[in-house]
Length: 168
Image (tube, rainbow, N blue to C red):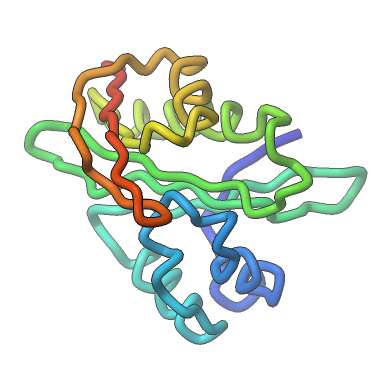
């Protein structure tokens, strides 16, 4: 069973989490790959997110028997309260759980949260060499809305990026 919850800076920030944040493969399509993360910097970030009025950071957890296991994160934000729109971003840090539907399920849950927050539209972006993100978004009803030519560089090669959106 998958569930989302606000991260506790003391209980949920572990060496496992730090390892994900410093894993270039986990973050190969995000700017996080450029940052060296420590436990204290991650705790600071989580505290800042927990105090933010414009962003909601949630841990992605799965429950196995009586144990909860933190497997990744999903974020709503920044939220534009005037237009009632927000971006989402997400990652599954546990590589052995990739391609098992957890990203799809996490987005399905975050859509419910966004609706409760009166958000009317969600947006997400991905680079063309990340077909997994495209599939996860499309499974949740997101549609292509934008194309950014030669937007990102990976391994000294330029790639296009896409913006997908979902009206709630």
